[in-house]
Structure formats: C-alpha cells, structure tokens
Amino acid sequence: MSARPRLFVVVLGLVLALLAGCGDDGGASATRAPGDPITADEADVLAGLLHRDFEAGGADFTVAAPFAEGTVLTLTGEVDFRRGEGSAQAVTSYSDGRPDDTRTLFFTATDLWYGDVPGLTEAVAAAGRPDVTYLQRPISSTQPDGTASLVDVLVQLVPRLSARADDDPRAFLERDYTWQGQSSVNGQLAGVYQFGAGTTVAVSAADQLLLQYVTRLTDQTFDVTVTLADHGERSITLPGEDVTAQAADYPDVVAELGF
Image (tube, rainbow, N blue to C red; front, side, top):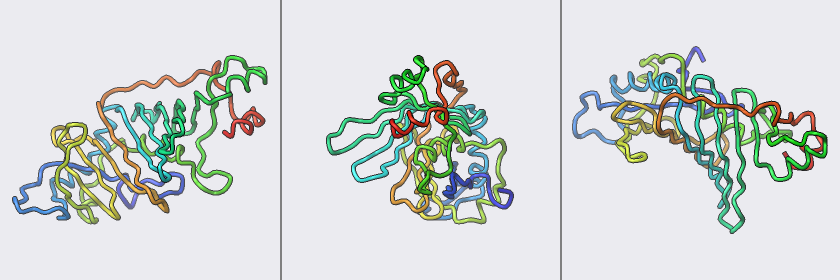
C-alpha cells in the first residue's frame, strides 16, 4: 500500500478502493457543479477521514448488498474499528414471498462465527457438544469454486473503513476525485464525493465523519452500501469456547447444514 493511499484495500482478491471525504468547498464559487475536482481543503479532509473513524473507536453500521434479483443481504450491527471486530445480524430477504433467512454473526480480522443456524444445536449435540450455539471458521479468501463469499467480503470491508494514521492529501489531488454536491444521510447533512467508476462517499458536514460508502465490487453487477452511525467506543464480546464449535472439527455437520 506504500505507493497509494491506505484507502485502497484488496479484500479477498477483489480490489476495493476505500475512499471517503467531506468538507467545505475550500472557497469554491457558488457556480461549482457536481463533477468538479476536489479542492485542497477537501483533500485534507479526505486524507484524515479513515483515521477519524479509528479515533472515534467504532460505530453502528448497516451494509446492504442486493446480490441477486429480488434478493438483498443486509448486515446490521456494530464495529470496533480499533480491534477490527464486530457483530451483526445478517438477514437475506426475498421478494418472492419466501421468509427472511436470519443469522447472527461475529467477526474478527481472521475468523467468523455463525449463530441461529437451523439444526446446528441438534446436529452438534448429536456429536457430543450439547451446548453449542455458534459455528466458527476462518474467513476465507475464496470458496472451493474459486469465488469469494459475499459475507466474508462484507465483514472485512466494514473494519477497513478506518486507518491508524492520516493519508497524504497530495495523493487525493493527483487522482480523479470529484465533488458531487450535498445529501442527507440519516438526517445529517453530508458532502458527497466520487472517484473511479462510481464509488461515492457521504461525510458529515458537521464533524467530518464518514456516514456512507457505496461501491461496486469487482466483476459484480450490484452496489454495496455501508452506512455508519453513532460513532464512538465499542466493545465486542465474542462467543466463548463453551458455546462454539470449530467447523473443521465437524465436517459431517458442516456438510449436513450446507455451511
């Protein structure tokens, strides 16, 4: 990452440019139009955006990914930016009348826990672990067919909307970052910026915190929208070993549940 801003991150082999920013117009005139280049002041704000997330400590988040026609995966939870950990309820909703499919997730930089998996408790109890409510596995870069798991991509994307230090503002001035106007996100006035082939961010005009990030994953036809709210300290309590089974230890259960 040394030759480009830290905002550019590779997630599971999918190049995700994690850009952001908001600020005043740096003295731009009233005739400024969407698509105009960012100003030097805005570059300064963009350069510190992810570090401000890190300094805030964490946030509530919602991720929406309409990955198939009439089907949307939504993650709603909270993230600890400093530790790179989070928890969420994952809901897959369908427009054809099928009931929602709901899971409870916990995640770190390396591992993912699934709860509320139908049949999990009974299946693992039959294997000698009657108290298990979560199945844990490493976050994987690819599935056996060579594709990336969408859940794995998303639970890595959210914590990476933070950085331990500011970036160099000059990097933003040298690239195709444009001002897109203003919008309202959860009732907060935000500046909107865009780069590349349509990735946008909305950042609070009041405190310059990231409110929304929208991007299209490489080789996909849908946009992923991450919305952050209530920035502040978070502490995530991961499931304990007494209620967790390692997926690798129960291959028959994993196969039975389609995990």
